[in-house]
Amino acid sequence: MSTPSSPAPRRFYWTAQGVTLIGAGVDLVVGVMKLITGMIVGSAALIADGIHSFSDIVTDVFVLAATHYGRQAPDRDHPYGHGRIETLATLWLGGVLIFVAGAIAASSVERLLDDQLATAPGATAIGIAVVSLLAKEAIFHYSLHAARRLDSALLEANAWHSRTDALSTLVVLVGLLGGQFGVGWMDAAAAILVGLMVGWVGGRLMWQSSRELIDTALPAEDERQLRRLAETVPGVTSVHDLRTRRLGSDVVLDLHIVVAPRVTVSEAHEIGNAVSRELRQSSRRLKDVTFHIDPEDDEGLIAHSLRPGLPLRAEIEQILDQRWAKHPAWRRRLALNLHYLDDRVDISLYVDSQIHHDDLDELAHELCRDLAPLPWVGQLTLWQGPGKA
Image (cartoon, helix red, strand yellow):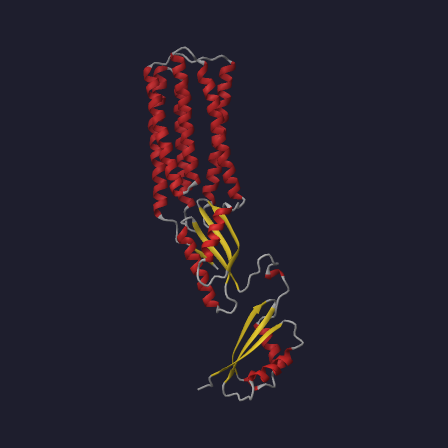
């Protein structure tokens, strides 16, 4: 039984969109400032950094689209939702960070080898770089805080992308200061270090996203907490085969719930619903909970669907019709309940109270003797109910 939670809260959507739009606005403003100032003072580093800021706007647009489509409700083609769109976007952003890191490092090594030293840029260019650095660093912290509050790997990836722009600007600032004081090689050396840092962040994001794409489970302690919580629900005997995986910012969970062997189907189903409600209330990350009801603990055994099957009701009634045809208790039965336990079928037969028999135990023995050759028959119980009106 699968019990999906309600659609993703609109608060998540608008918060994620708002954070990204603010970041895009900052990218636009600082990009224009760096580009214009670089052209005025003749700083190739500032011009390149301005172009880098404009490239961040393209990434912001991509994040907006991924957030929008990734939070859409499940449909026929995507019954588990669209959360993996966020995963793919995070993987893509990790690749972008590695590409940016390689470009920064390669360019800086080339400048060192060619002995290209920065020239004095002036106070205006240095001031623009400082303002840009502070703005991008503020956006990084703002986006990272929102990403962790919403538990969004995509927003976190975009936050680190903003940090790469801040680090890029820091490299430019170091180069500008070095050029101002006649130490031009500082620009290239700092850029190599920043490239390594950016590459590490990109690799970490790609690794995390790749693990999600192959359905890596939540940490063991998180799963143990979910199991312990499920076992506190009244009516639950034990829990096993608990499995988890992530879909973007959400978590999908399935588990086997062991209940008392002879409870009704509706009661067992409601116990499962209670477990699902308890788990989803404990974590807003749980998007879907699928539970399987077990009347006995079969953990570690071969799945029931792979084992030789026991006869179902239609076949059992046909067999009983043949073997109990002579018994009035069977012909005038009120109800027949079947319990599949311990690889046997326990039979509970409810007989009309108008059926007269000196000893129900003796009748039960007679019925059992007729079933003796059947290896799948377990316990037989007779119940005498009220007569028909």
